Length: 159
Image 1 (cartoon, rainbow, N blue to C red):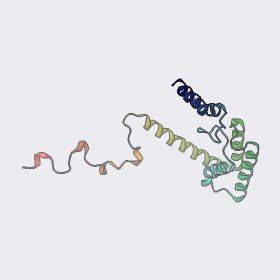
Image 2 (spheres, rainbow, N blue to C red):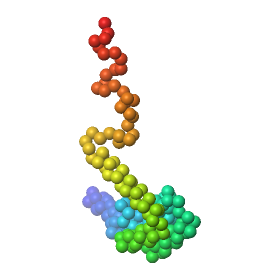
Image 3 (cartoon, rainbow, N blue to C red):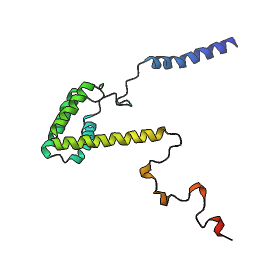
Image 4 (tube, rainbow, N blue to C red):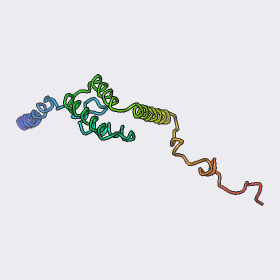
């Protein structure tokens, strides 16, 4: 009986040993973490900035300059590398330098409007019992009767 118990213990140890070795090996870091703590790919940067500049009617020359600046940035800050806030700030400044003053003003206005929309959404989701944002609700005359009342004549008008 003791021999069977001893054999079972040795067998269990033999099975568990590789798991312990595997657990001790370092896991490779994720290629992209949530919260943008790593540099995105060049393609993602191109897409992000062209989307931001999409309504500014960039000329062909401006588009090429934007792509060139992002290409240079991506070479010095490859995908998956830690985010360098100073370099990201410098990238934004270079890209803003491609725009003329009217485009810069229009871009700033778009970013300001987007920031306000995000703040409104955040405030609405923090309110207890929050429902749809006001811009997505039906007008008051199309919302239906208040307090679950049925439409029709008032109770005193019926016989």
